[in-house]
Image (tube, rainbow, N blue to C red; front, top):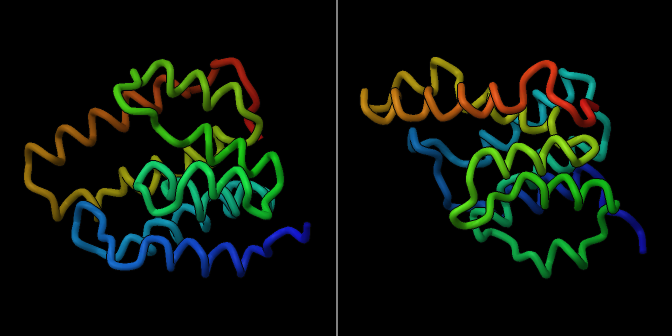
Length: 153
């Protein structure tokens, strides 16, 4: 099976999230593009960039787990997307452990957290939401932080 190109993955991700907005009311594809750019800027490879485009697709019900399993993606890209997909009721510690145990996932999550915690994005939110999200992102960064075991690529 021929693997999807990054350009095809971008088109697919944008279409899957069509009509969705982020917490600030911006088109969701802007977040996906920022995370993909963040992965690239952090030295991520093509598999990680592909995962960045798709990192919220299953969690947000834009694409199904069945689609992911059958998709023309590398096993590593699929594993990263799966690792970044939160399970219902999952504790942050379990989520972080799965990310750390999956080759390449930590870098993608770092790019995701960096964009989510961007002060310009947070500034448009109400104070309680901004405070809650800032604390949530800081906790996840601490769980994934320096000195934690697991692949960092």
